[in-house]
Length: 337
Ligand code: HEM
Image (cartoon, rainbow, N blue to C red; front, side, top):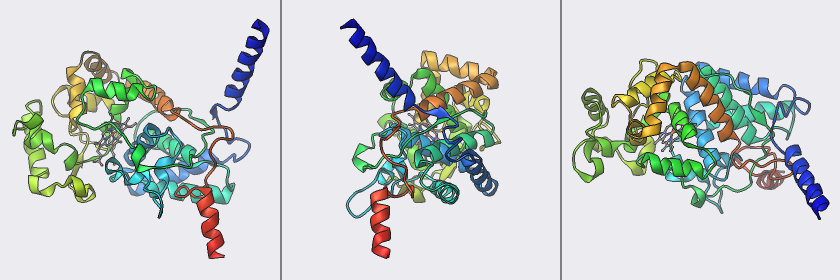
């Protein structure tokens, strides 16, 4: 009996090891894959320095819902409303970057590199381009075939740190990952609708959030007048730089972001709350003083995020078009013929 259990354990180990993610998974099947991803991201970045922030958010929203399976990239069709049409996803960007990379990779090696890996690699390259560390990223993810608006339960920016920790624990990320990855908010844009309550009606008081720095409050009130904001139509909403404590809003810079957090300069309520919770404020203070520590931990937490709920081996598929599952792609092309 003991021997049988040992054999079963060994078998389970072999199966999980052989189907886990690996560094340079495409080194034989598509040797230039990572180079191509990098080149296309670089090209987009040169035209628009906000591309890395778009990618980072896209990666988080992919991984949080059904794991990092590229389900966020699928379009809705006649029968199904996809994740990307859920309200928190309406301001996601950089789908075009992923499409361009996929088109280049399909020319190089058809049907080999998954959309989930493309997103993870492009995000990794975006992090480097915006000043983060170059981290080795395990690949070998497969693409999911389901994307449904009903599965989208992303954490709101109005929740407490405790609630955000619980949300992150549900995907096996801890409080250190949460505090560190919120440092991604040192770059990019934030639509006014996501923080209007803080400006005009904090916790139902009819007043602004007293924790906002007064000078920042004046700036934000001007940029986000009440009539200009409609959460229903958020894509047309005004936006501000997420990091209001810097003159370099596209530089992934933990120091300025956490310094801002500790001094009432955060735009989102959840980011501001990091200052008022014991462990998170200590970590924020450490990141202010050690950019190196932030960069190192950010890379680690990104790799962890990229491992969430991945499909490997024979699971899922490798989509030919990141916006459609293969069965839809082949039935579309057969209709065209
Ligand atoms: C509880 C967790 C989180 C909440 C509540 C949250 C919330 C938000 C909100 C409301 C925005 C503004 C979106 C817009 O106006 O279009 C935003 C932007 C952003 N988020 Fe998060 N976020 C969280 C975690 C993360 C994580 C883990 C990452 C990266 C790994 C991330 C990266 C970003 C980036 C880079 C932007 C700027 C997007 C852009 O420039 O288009 N966020 N986030």
